Length: 355
Ligand code: RUB
Image 1 (cartoon, rainbow, N blue to C red):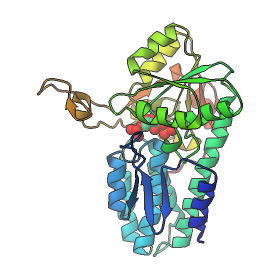
Image 2: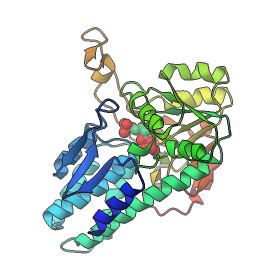
Image 3: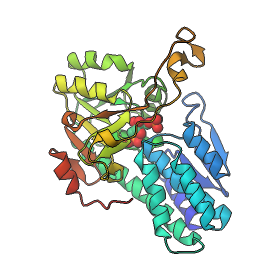
């Protein structure tokens, strides 16, 4: 068994909910577009098809697309024998698929940096790097999950937005759901309020699906109900993931996150982002520098392919928003929970800047 096959076997033995893996010379992906009604596994043989799968959100979530980037580079190396030109083409193509989540860019840069100076890029080095990245991300999920679980009290109802779970990460619980899963595994009696996350409905389709699988009580609400439930004392904590965190703690996360942060502040409810040190972009001083991806506005004017709005009505679909650091109670990472002042305390994390 090759070391890559061993890694995949090891992950499967841990009963992880893997979003993507390598099997018999090809990539296997859970088709997240079809969840929860169909658990379809797709086979991908070409880097270009993987790029399209990231772009069209067959695989999504910042951690998972970072991992997909690593697997894409491995596939490119395998197919081209490590030809420098093809590796550069694959890196550029994969990085161009989605602009906001930084893990994708960082992971690909890390792989390319590990083979700097080689004429023909050595497959064994790329393989070792991919294994390191995947194992590290899984360790992050367990560590940040444990750090965050300490903040959750018995009896808490935790509100989350979008899907920051196993299928958005490396299979344990991603970021926000790692915190929730660890708290549940510690025997804390908790409930989750999942916001449906219009227009793509990641919360209704995937967060609710995963929490049900993990046996964690979940109640689904539409996004515009969060303020009401907070005002009624029905939410004790808010925990969300992040697609990118600036050096001052401002964060980009799924559209709607900012609105929950405002309501949480008003009602003095702690609002946390669960993330990994890898998601912090020290090159950006504040969230103003984060590129917010705009997606097809047809997703706003239609639902399940059926038109909601009159023909000709204009719509907008920014896929993410920026929550300023002033609304954050803490940043949960694998290295601990970072408190204010975020710009200073994030610097102390001693994280290597990869760019
Ligand atoms: C996913 C999304 C998730 C983040 C954060 O966006 O915004 O909330 O990825 O979760 P999309 P995590 O579905 O558009 O990819 O930090 O776990 O990635």
